[in-house]
Length: 308
Image 1 (cartoon, rainbow, N blue to C red):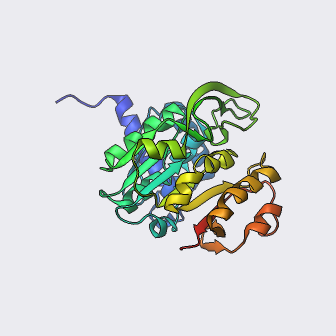
Image 2 (cartoon, helix red, strand yellow):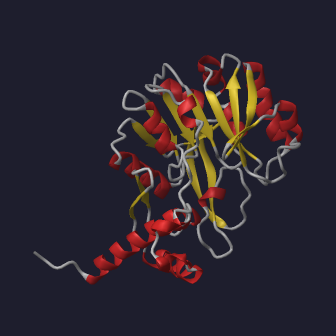
Image 3 (spheres, helix red, strand yellow):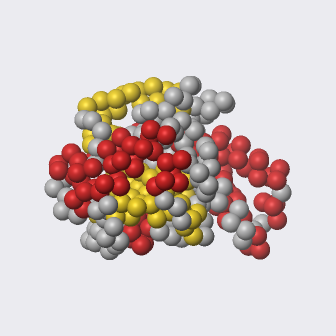
């Protein structure tokens, strides 16, 4: 039997230390090695992750594996060193066993993974992620967790079928910042490419979908186009919808477009999803972006059809 190489031992240590750091940041301090309580050690470990990460599956507190690509990206680094986001508690309420659900703007799968688990093997998850290394990573995450009913597409949903310019943003340190990447956002610095686009209506026709229970949409201010492009399907299936609001480029006409599409279809805003509940609000408050909405403050808005 060959002795594991020194680099392999280093990777084992990195995986273990990053796991302990993530758990530490969920305040389970009594289980943590003392050395990880030191801020300097945390900063050093973050630098090690940026330098040495080669791609791999990290273990979450829920016992799932999440594939984190080797590409240096703000999301990737945060996923390695910060406490993992808690699964949105609304998911099991709107993703029934055997249901069909969609994650539009899936990133590393913080929503896709619990959505796929909620609908189970008899259901279907469609995740849309046009950034290639994130789409590949999410596909690996679903596969390693035995969620074969989850499918990842690199198509970008919009209100037209064809191709469109897409920008993968960079931050001030030239690190990729895919969370600000979009078909519409004027992100300044970034890598520009072209992606294939389709509409939600066309996609559902091509897939012969007979139901759609839930759609989550987080696409950096392109939400109005996604919703317009799915008006037929939304009208037919009446899925619950969560969409992102408060993007720094969001305009009043963007909010009007979403309201003008959804309200005639019988949708009301149930509220803003927060960590321990849902803050009630309505269409008028959303249009004016009044309290409890805050300017340039990202939030997820839950919309429900009148049948709910």
